[in-house]
Image (cartoon, rainbow, N blue to C red; front, side):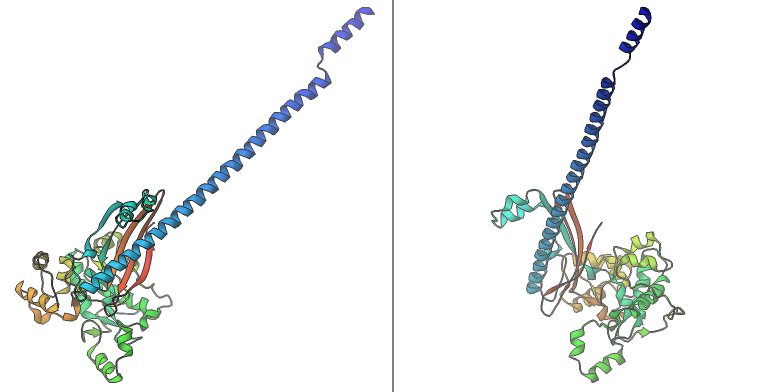
Length: 379
């Protein structure tokens, strides 16, 4: 009897107490709560850090964009002053043709005596100005002698065909591009634009009718609605998009990405028809613009142009005659020695933010003022 009671006491003493079990559960629960709290707090801190970083990036990007805008204003000032000194000539030896290498912003501010020059120690600028009329303007393929009338220019198509042949591409694509361009313009408000709206507004009705009878615009009277390719899709329910850049050629049947890359250095899409600046154009563009001119003759002309630039179209014609080209077949309206459209390439690096921007500027030859046509950021 006594032994059984002793054994029972031993069994009770060997079992864990209920109080000890509750204490262990409380400790584990506390550890879980602490761990969960640490996870929640660390997540909140991480999200807060990401949000702060995002706000900093937005601030740096906004500052970089404002710096880029200031650099653009400075570029516009250069182009305006260039027009004041040389109003009728645009050549590669001008101040606008000098590119800016990667330079610290504080160096610019220090040169003008700005007391806050050190604030730009972590900001770098680089860029260049490109003559947009040094390239072949695809907009020339379709002329607008009167608002709302879109006419294909055979002479410009022939020039584009010569350029495609020089680059080893299919020359028949020129007609396809012209039809695609006209179809896109027909669905856009720009079909009512002319090369000079102000001049059209000040023209008398009799003079306007005479201009239309002669063909108007670039290329004299060499306009036709039948360039040799059937325009069966002119009334299609889905109209092609308007061409706005070189990449738009990818929408034209027959163009591959490789062909577009070949054309990129030599073609451009501008809002209005323009002439080719013979002071800045490449040899390929000159050979394509001038009928009967070979690439070697154009290269000789470019080499001669490096020493003495052309002051007017008459100088260009004399140089072409000296190069052995018959000037009788040349349309002087296709050539010029001054430029209205410029491409501004600029890059701003402000700490972690970078802005790579391309801007098309129009410089009014009458008032020497500049207007921004479009701004595109490179991604």
